[in-house]
Image (cartoon, rainbow, N blue to C red; front, top):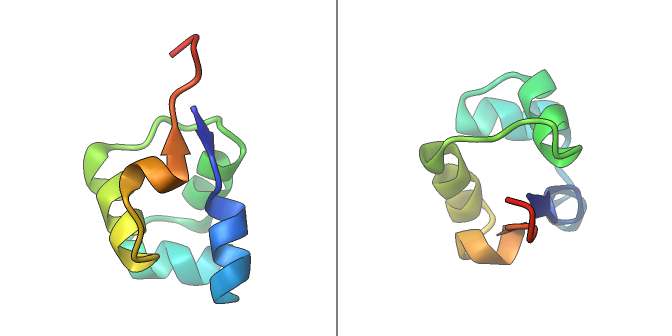
Length: 66
């Protein structure tokens, strides 16, 4: 899965640690999500999308391999 989470964070000027606290996960989890190394839950994806006032599909996109 590809994502634009790092870009969205930059637009809002928030750190990985700040985002992690806002959505209730560790900074390491946010880092792993950004690198595509973590398959996040639907709930976490929805929390992140709500925080950035976007649709989930605007931030997270399935690869053809997914």
